[in-house]
Length: 392
Ligand code: NAI
Image (tube, rainbow, N blue to C red):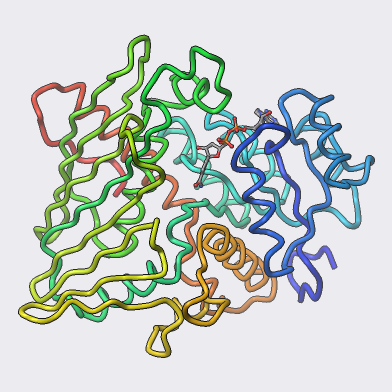
């Protein structure tokens, strides 16, 4: 059952790199992978420190023979096994995504990689190329595109429900780095503020890429050019902790994107508002079960998750009846559901079903990295000049 083609009538065997003790996102990946029973976590190199990684593996009941000191050892051992992993989730800091993802793809494994895809545009281009050449799947976890009502908003824009899009406002404000917590040893903040490990972007790479993806995902618009103003408010920091980016989309729509790690009082309050010629749509992740549609000269309508009128994309990502709240874990699980469907469909030589449609993949990751490059280029040009990213 390890053939590249043929039906996979079993759970996908998942491996993980990173996500050990004290790590943030790896745990969310594990919840997401469990929710629909599509995966079984069977192997991992969970920590940059091999001993800590093995100790963690034992706690999550990974067979000791499949708990590895590092990702190279994991690849070498797994590729020899008849029951080798199908797919690996890469939950490590940004600078390690490229070498780890490239090595797994080249060894014949499918990959689920965290964002931003890489720390340089050059590496992102190469990684997308490698995925293409090897024919392996490269998924990217742009979390917010997993929400059912984000799919509903996308379908509504595509169906012309708000007319031609004029204005896009998207923001991702956070409070947690409003002081120099990296100097106090905060694990997550310390690599995020280090250009060698984070890449050229601070807030813009970490959360601006989510906002950029969400705006493009819902509107279907392609960026034409951007103009950015970055700021670093906290002393001793090198990378931006606040970004304002003006966006010009092909076809004339205008946008404004704000990402901030110093927005006191805000916690993962990613918000999108899209204004068209005949109406607008508004979605806020702290209330992810509602989408507000305001038609021109009409009463605003609150669209609820799991409504019978929801489109296919939203319905495929809905588990509970209306009124029972779904949220972040379910959205993340929808990405995992989508990845599983794409992987299965690929092996079975068929088109993916609804949950496997519009799944964030390598090129979306590359666009995010190209966006960060363009933002920093624009800011460094210092003239508030307009710079076109090489990939949009
Ligand atoms: P973290 O610092 O909490 O965890 C990183 C983990 O990777 C640690 O367990 C560390 O030991 C391990 N690690 C580092 N180098 C390794 C290596 N070479 N081999 C094996 N393990 C290694 O970082 P966090 O916050 O979990 O972020 C990880 C990635 O996830 C980043 O790329 C970040 O941008 C992304 N992220 C994405 C989110 C989303 O919504 N999709 C949310 C939070 C983070």
